[in-house]
Image (cartoon, rainbow, N blue to C red; front, side, top):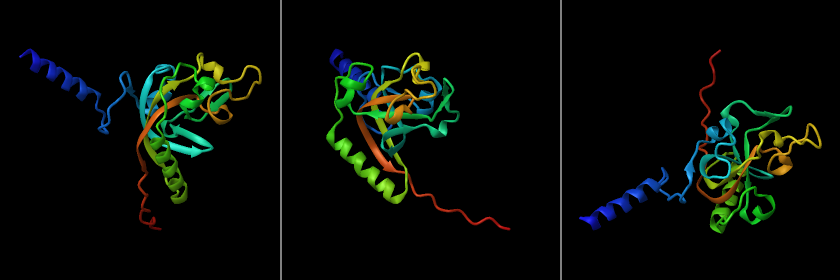
Length: 186
């Protein structure tokens, strides 16, 4: 009976770790909605998160929360709802928290391939991103004190309100093509 109880406990623990995509989460990873991140920027700071959303591949990769509503305003600047990707190989220079993982090469290659097709076909990328979420605290530090009116966030030109140090990108798909509806009647 004791052995069976241990097996059931292990099976239950494994089941709890399974996400909606069927992939196992890293221990301590929290599934978070993209809009939930933008509603409370510092809540998940320094924690492993799993986000599913639109990936924008311009200049670098970003998780977009443009559909989440209001922009974040700091020091007179209006930030787009963007989370910059950070490759763990750059974490020693750019991460705010210690990083002890890497981003798998097959995952990066797949994302790069899908970005190529997304631009070619003019479609958006939807993917699940797992990594270490970071933002600056206090939030006011996203605006430069040295150069007022300048962004001091994350990513290219500091325009992101946060960054995610990437451990994995999976379940990468192109958004289904939108069929044009019937022409409006006059």
